[in-house]
Image (cartoon, rainbow, N blue to C red; front, side):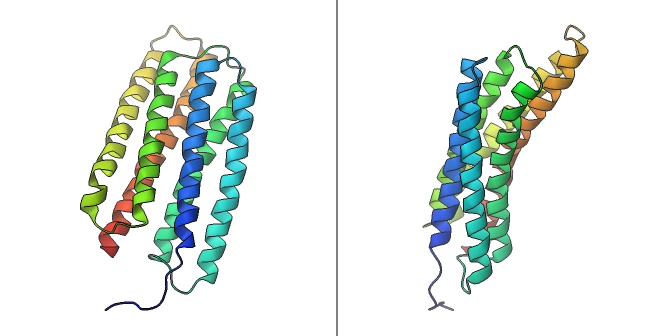
Length: 207
């Protein structure tokens, strides 16, 4: 059956805006890692992105409550919005902890993870953009596979980094700090895969 009622395309603007903030936050985190110990400027930029993303998420959920015809199922919109917002929240929480934890060095594996995160958010943003016009899984397959590949790469880097922390050469307090910091960035990368899975489900249901 052809649905003759118009669907609210403003949702796609909000989805894409959230995805852009995820890319921006990840990029600022990568810059923070490269410029360490100079962190204040990038932490503030991430904080600003997080505030703006929260506003977009609230607008999307308010519109969801007020709109009769939506681009796809309401629960999928809710999951997509919250999933992207969670990625941004994890990056913001991570960035603030460098000063809280009095971190005094930036290990190479963490720098590698920031690059993985940037690439994962870029791939995610591409998938979100394609969602506006595409309802064919074949048209999103390559970018969704790339998100999964990056998540697996992030797992590998994380496992190697955490294994090294527990070899016995790292002071216990630093083990505690970096285990948590690696957890935050791993959760952000995992979040990209979770949102990719949501997008895949949306396309399958609406194709």
